[in-house]
Image (tube, rainbow, N blue to C red; front, top):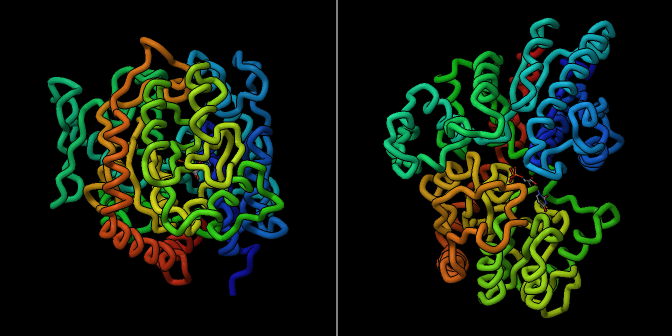
Length: 493
Ligand code: UDP
């Protein structure tokens, strides 16, 4: 009989760039601990409370999980103190500095892992590294333990990326306005515009092609990929990726699922309590929840078009706005006059604006919510599936256009609002006003997409409900994600 201490010790180092990497990797740590494996999650001082509170909620008394904090050398890289995530840096010009600091953080984590190697009970048996922590491979090889990567992407997007790297079809495009045909999952036809491809294939990224090459080499060298997904969702993408990349691809999600019923009102923020009280007063399936991830911002003029649609459509809307305080004054005035933008929820209000952090998993699980307008970040996509919630898709950038095709064309659980252009400067776009602001989607187009979902979406609702059931089964004992967690544990002994 295996005991907890005979199980391998997992060291997880989430990519600190974004909350959307930290949350699912923390959840993976909690799942591994629930299978009896000891886990250490290493992060920075600013991110540590986020990780610790999630661990405390998921595993009473933090059973089996240690959260270790290692300083982040922000000042040495010319960043203001506390800039320990990309959404916290004041300007896009500081992105290279953030990556320099993250390298310094990685070196400190590697030193820590080497020191732990001398302590029998703390010795790492397997490292799971967030996608940009390329330093992790070196230390894993030194310690003679497996190294897995976690990207935060789904298996379908990773498969597309793998095929693009191998087949290089995008290089033959005469312009970024042409469609690339990626034959990933026949008989589904899968095409995206050149400009909608992930940054790996866009020549000018802020980090340059050398950095992208380093990430690719890291991906090719690691022992396996851990994916927040479940095998029944992505039409065999994980197995196809494993075959193409020649390594293990283990789908262990949806990792948010064990959190779904948890919203402890005492631990919740004022914003969270306000959202839930507002939803409690609404009819079943009547509300549209609108959120574009942990940091996504759209240009102010585009945000106004969206806002006009949300206040004039027939459904109550719960709208999370990132960076609302930095919007131009006229937009803030408009929000104040037309929505509950000051966080005051009037009993019969039509559009509740949340300026802070919304309890997304609990919102999606609330019976009053009937649809989710999302930027198709993979975390949000999977949370929507896990809640059985159909989507209106509004991708911004990264692999989100690929996820949109999966949601709309392959799975048939969403309606595309019709975006063709990536949003530029996603972290700062809301600050742009006047001539710089670009509008691609008018208010009428938004309302049409919402109507297709809310009035005519029964088929999508049925399909996503079936997927919700499969998601639950995947994590239950003997289910596909459950078994993949066991494989991960056994391959690291
Ligand atoms: N999220 C949340 N509340 C918010 C905004 C985001 O809980 O107000 C969470 C959401 O539940 C998801 C993550 O942040 O887990 C966003 O991840 P995703 O991959 O969808 O998007 P990204 O932030 O990477 O663009």
